[in-house]
Length: 352
Image (tube, rainbow, N blue to C red; front, side):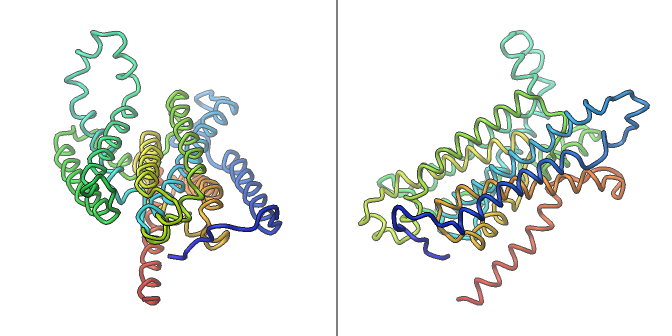
């Protein structure tokens, strides 16, 4: 992993980097507009016969494209944080088991929602929880996994060990995967296809505005927090001794990065389910274009992540007739990210 530049000269503006950033912002905005305009109206239906206006179709599509942008930005930003936290360029937001924890929470909700619905409906203020379906269980499962991984990843004295954190996430991911498979056998047969779509990552145009608003607020909060620790993450990429000698409190930095990455990943899962490899692909693209400085990566990676997932979502929306229905967008990201991961792994072997 390249060692980032810790400091640069003050008072100078790198117009080359500024031009790249402006070009990236313009490209992301253009992709947003293009994705809203491209694609069928409502998949699997005749919009004219249903009397659906073009304005309603555009509103639905804007919800879908906007959700894709939010999820892509969150996952790319979480990828930068985790790669810096673990000092591993192959780290992905799902390496800590957060996605499988969220999916397990949703599966528990699906299996037992009918049994507890009557109890919830007795209390009016519980109705809000019932109405939002999988959002709350996804957040609960993701955040619970974050807490368990954090507790297991600490050494004596409370220090956070990146290697132990990584291994704890892998083990918890396997446990959550087994729980998901067990619960899947308890789900009625007719609902299993919907669950499969969710487990691969599916962006819906019918997501409620409150759900989108909550996810967007979480992503903006995480983005602001990440920008605040950007300079410290540059120094934290050095060895522990060097970072401590330069005045960085590694324990606080690692906890902050871990909490922010968990929040961002949980928000994306609550909105679209588990979508893999976005947090792996996009940070590496940004490093090749803008260098390894975290101060820049934390600005540009969310833009690249948003653009990437908007394009992937538009692809599955436009090719639904080819595959007898829309593919989950997570299938496309996995088909792109799997070979990319193998390429990075091979390149690291060559370097070593």
